[in-house]
Length: 320
Image 1: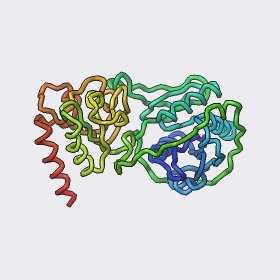
Image 2: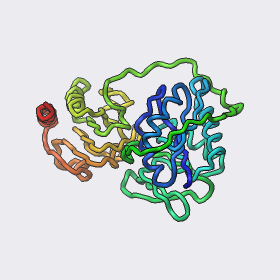
Image 3: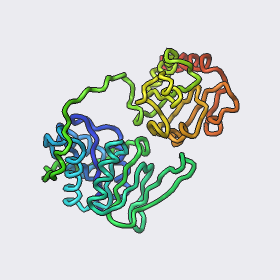
Image 4: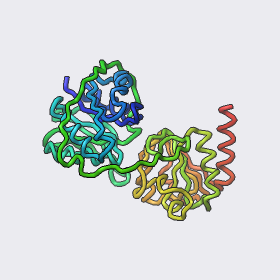
């Protein structure tokens, strides 16, 4: 059976959820061969094997931490030469897209970004994408070379499957460009205890209607009751009410959770572009004519300062 390269996103051996989703998609079109790089790479083999990886190509060289993306591109190109895959799958993060684009240029192939589904076609792997702020769904394939595809988080379920997970050392010859940009220092991101925004199964977002930084505590309380991530509209971020790292929208982050709750958000096209592919959308807004209601599965017309605390209390009560 044809093999599919899967780039592993991990932190010191702890595999992040988008990689496990990639393994689910990879099994639809071939046998997953995972590529794990950096410190703790070998420790990923157990989890990857439990999710269908037949092989795990490992390289723990220090270059992956000491320099920016080029060493990872070198390694993925080396893995491509060893495996000759039918597709290369990479998580659709900012770094993932850069790695994928550089690899596609090197191997003379096309690239598809932000795919939400994959299937095997008669002429190669077919990727599904959402286009024009998710107003349309497209299916496309690469016409030349091996498709390099980045996949949005939460596009597929995490499905355990038995795989050999055999560890093999990947021989990597780093290019002259690999050491071009050195990482001089790192500052750990302060943990909030909440899920990563782009990976969360539930996202609760606040907008202009929250009316102040101090009022985001209401949004956070609902998010914490649901085990959700907190998002914000551009209006809220521009007003300084919440960090830019939590912005959802065309100039922020794109999310595709199982549940998206928009509180005090009117539903401008810029915001819709970042959340319209969510599986279930709930809006809370006191303006019955707000554009967000054209998009939602469930809408509540009411003051968020009354509705959201009641919702938080109800969730907490049911959990209790």
